[in-house]
Image (cartoon, rainbow over all chains, first blue to last red):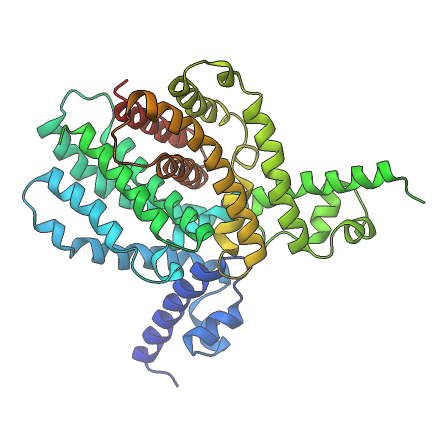
Length: 201
Length: 201
């Protein structure tokens, strides 16, 4: 009989496996067998924790938010006192995170929603929650920076936060097609230049 | 016995079916049977024209470039005499093209490369050719506008053209997750504002 610790561990191994395999080949091409092999767990363990592959994908999107939120919350730019410095620090940090292989540095939820948006509403909603939830966090910094440096500007903080995510998601697509993250880094440079222009910095 | 005309027609029907089905559910989830059903052709006709689903996907990426290039080449903004007006006209035209259902208005090659980049180099290369080829066309307008209005700027025309594509591709992902193209339109507004700031217009 399994212990509770082992069960938690197998579940986490499967979620980590989902991040690895789905970011490499997409959601539809990923099989439960591959996820089990990557996680080093049995198919019995898989179905103990998840009803279906879809069920795992929904949990993986939530897990993705948890894992990435921890990365952003503990990033050095959070210690800066000025909200515009923190916003520019966020963009610079996203550029730093481009170091690694493309399956390691690209986005689980952007990858999943690209192919499932019209065919699987549970996965789409989980991806939406992750992307728009993170955008809301970034929008709070933008709102604080806007109050200080561009109080009369016509754009909303959330629209700029979502534009930042659009650039990041699209830059990943260009990097994937080019098999090189450099094109993404250059797009982030344009984004930084845009943000500086909006705040006259 | 089929005539040559019928064969051309079946091939085009299959390519059009690929645009519809793959943009709805992604490449891996699409089956040859679904493509035949959507095209209204037999499986025999499919394998007369394409060796495999991969072979069709590569042809569909090339077909996508042909079809979309015709749309851009005949768009009204091409008649504007100033290259910056044409560039801003291109962005405004991309915003107009957001009218329709998401499978109708989003990008075949961005969708395919998102999931196949690490597992299928033939499809990845065909998508790369489409995205970077179109970016080269946009870069020519940017180069002409830069010579006139921002000759000393440090960014390159191709990097800005690729940034434009990044915004468009990423805006599609946000629209898919939100099931609404409005978020994409707002991101295009930010892109337009950025381009105007680069050229002081």
